[in-house]
Image (cartoon, rainbow, N blue to C red; front, side):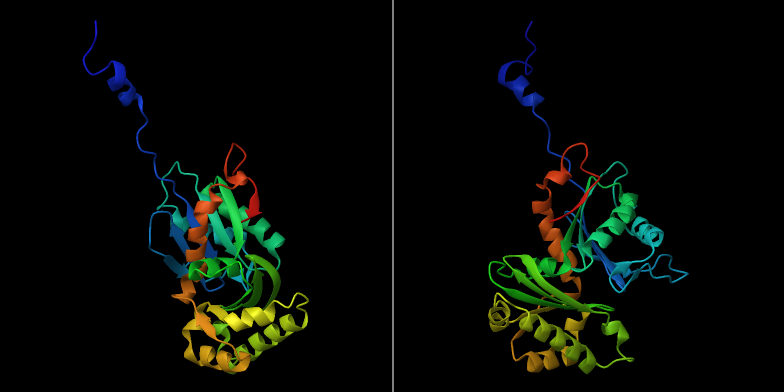
Length: 273
């Protein structure tokens, strides 16, 4: 006997899978002063102080290095644990300081186990900033990121890091140092990059203008002085303090196609995007 609605094309239609369940993936920026996260499908940036436990005020990230893995894990569990479905295994794209990446990746892998990720990919913070700004990555680009306790100058070419320098100073040090001291440090790093630029990429990057991000980009006294010292246009990224995590979120689509994020062993390695 034929049951109406369950034979032929109707049966085939009924057997089609329903809409795929949304993936719960995470873009993450672990800063010395602030931690920022963005979950897939949400335009909201979660922004909290980088402290292991609010009452103790202990800082598990210092000058771009993870110094307390357990404290970082506690912070992420508190920030994201209740926002991720219990059975989810998110893909995490994490921004990282350009220098000392191997050590940072090793620490990050241990910290992120609290989220049970199916894959962890790290991307240089400067590249994430450039992606957030919609910059043309096929041409040389100089990115200056003035954070709370770390300032980086990074030269990108075709999206890859070709030179990078940093100084352990930032806006959190103002009072002990002046805005002029920060600008002087950036100027020295740019000059050193120019001296060692065998491919002559820095002049082309300066001609198109410096991309400025981080909390320091919100301070007119820094941006104004930097323009004068570098003799080059300074382009402030929109919402510069959250640019890195927003760029990481845009990279999630490409990261989902990365071989390390698929298959049974995907959750183990941490790789570069």
